[in-house]
Length: 160
Image 1 (tube, rainbow, N blue to C red):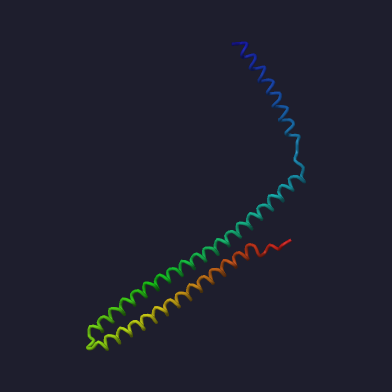
Image 2 (image 1 turned 135 degrees about the horizontal axis):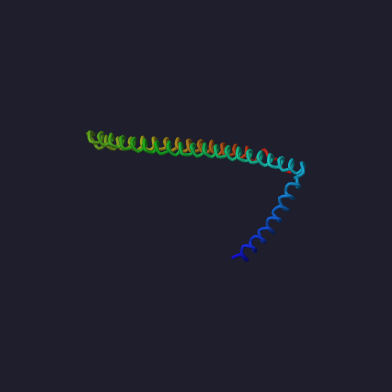
């Protein structure tokens, strides 16, 4: 046991002297002021670039969100329009059936059927035309929003 303790004390003494030497060297070493300033400037520049990138990404995300909301709103409007058109067609058809039931002659029934087909076709055509115009307008506004956001993101950078 005594030999082991002596060896440990000897080894720890060597390590202690190395530790003292390292501590002594570390207290004497100084980082030059120019190096510290360089690191501070680089860190500040990197922070500014990160904030600029974050701001650009946030603006782009906002534009995409507006576009998505616009598209969802356009889809909802189209769906509501189709539901309204379906109800109008069913109501018009049932109204025509009631009129046909009251027809007193074949000629009157044929005229009612012809009027139904003409009115129904015109109403459906008008609805499809309006829906197409709404879809075109929604897509145009969405594309303009995306184009604006892309220009904001990349338009500021000039080609070298």
